[in-house]
Length: 84
Image 1: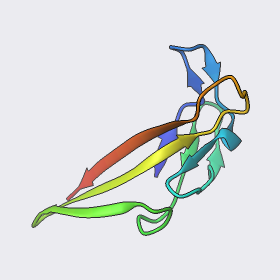
Image 2 (image 1 turned 90 degrees about the horizontal axis):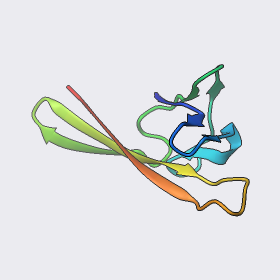
Image 3 (image 1 turned 120 degrees about the horizontal axis):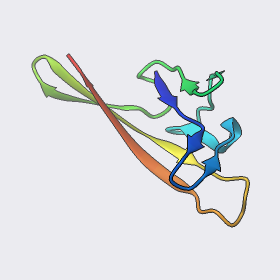
Image 4 (image 1 turned 30 degrees about the horizontal axis):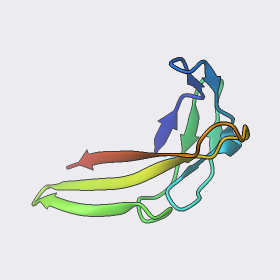
């Protein structure tokens, strides 16, 4: 599960759910008042799994931001999470 705030205070920008996707094109699965959630199994959406040690896994993916406003640039934000 990845949770994203739709508001970017640094640029005073509100992001709509359809402007975001996880990994290989997986859309937001739940829209809450102040959070968008992506809830997918770790084997979907192109999420990559690496074995770091005997008891630690590293999950890697990206959030893709494709703005409705053509004056804003597409962004790819890398994400990593480790679990034991």
